[in-house]
Image (cartoon, rainbow, N blue to C red; front, side, top):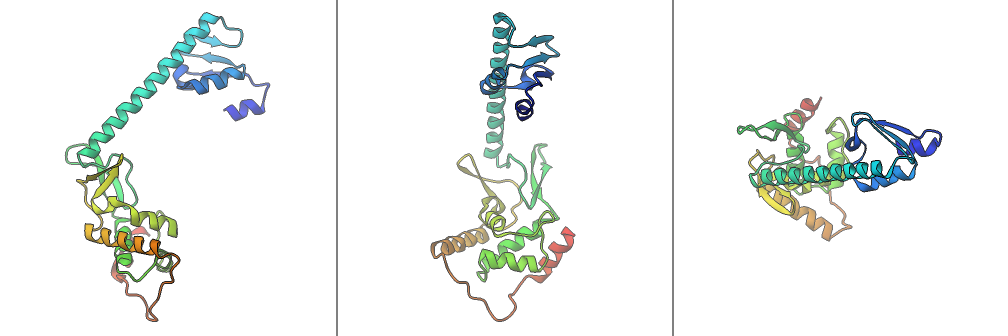
Length: 232
């Protein structure tokens, strides 16, 4: 909206529901005020502009502060609720790859395995934990076998992110604290720890050449086929 107003100086009128639908912070209020706009607040039955009385501007400014306070309170309550869920072992955000948001036995939203993607996440961890691949060669092999996540080919950056994510082991980090989850893990804690040691070792020795066997790598072929077929 701001880009349009700046590009078209002849357009100086905004039609909006009410104050807190237009802005909830002082910066946005000041930005629009500098543009010299005429603002129609439909539900509040007010029209504000450069020629508005000081008393009208004062009341509008108070409404902006009230909207800002509401936004801050809402944010605090949201963070408080998410922190309480984390302490109870419930992952308090959107489900990452391999999981989906579901209703738990207590009625609260939590995460559970995604049947279409869980086998792929598990396979990524198990194959890397075997110690035969770098992230780059693992990604290459997965793409050769047609493994896809959300319909897209894999890249080293997102696979590395997956391998570093503690959440898949049954624990998760939230607000600087590690919590024990009450959801189903996709890999064992032992597997996750081994993956971290391998990643740390490769990072410490980087750059490092990865030796490959002349034979075809030992893959859990059945799991790969299940993963691919479930995605397709």
